[in-house]
Image (cartoon, rainbow, N blue to C red; front, top):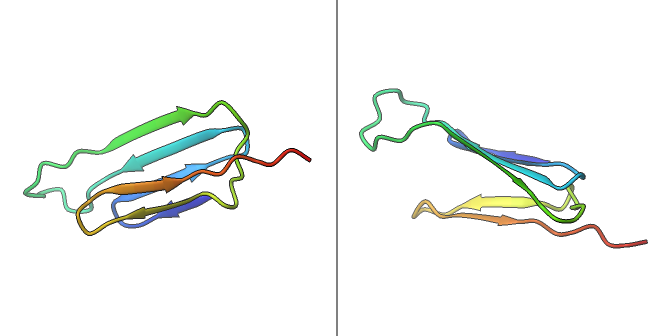
Length: 71
């Protein structure tokens, strides 16, 4: 799963890794935003097809990461 806009990208894979990265498209940005990347290893396998992310107008990032159901 990958959810990206021009500034933030959230990716997940079935092994339980969540990668959140970002970059500002304007190199002369007035907010001093710098590129970043954060990798989080989750304790269980995740459902990468159901993972979603949204950035609010206030700049808050919400990520929904459901775990895979046992079969």
